[in-house]
Length: 298
Image (cartoon, rainbow, N blue to C red; front, side, top):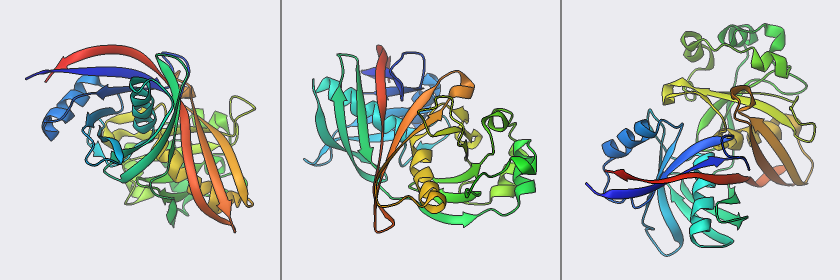
């Protein structure tokens, strides 16, 4: 047993006690998988990061990401929060690669103060559509809504994957999204597999008129009844925007709201680089601020 320092941050926000909380355990080399899982449950956040030594000179660090229920190969708010923390420790703006199970993740960090900054990372995998969901009545029953609440404009329910598969369900209004009561019994029957452990819903009625989408994400099988901000879902959502919005060539920036229904508003920036009608590159970015520092015995 040894003392291992940790930091908690609120991610995808500039304000403490908003956004998505994240614990980052430093000096975690030597911890077993079971120990990391138990520590994650102790913090009781949606995700905890364990920073391990870089495996080669191109990496700033190698990180492992755990939810209360399992390990993830990639996640957005842990990537942003850890990148900001490492940038703060490096005392300035930085560009580096974080090693994750999904692969190398290039990050750019800007430091705003000694406790806050912002980070942007390139998606390690571009999104792809896996399948569509045709039974809107079944989807509505799963969400506790009416069939007329499902879909808007060109957007239709479908499964997209950018490292983590997410059923993406468009909802007609923000009011309908806020009325959702998820039936866990109907979830697997409705969305199938893969991706039946999590669910992402979205509409085009943001709280802030300068933003673009309002969203919620549910992942009870991961130990996350609802998540305040989910970068991996936004990565998959890039596929839905490309499929249904068909943006013209150029650079397109979207600000996506999540966590507002939970009282932890999070703002996630998604940027798409489109050439010849295809998505060539996508980035996710946001702010993070340190909340606590401490030591855990493990």
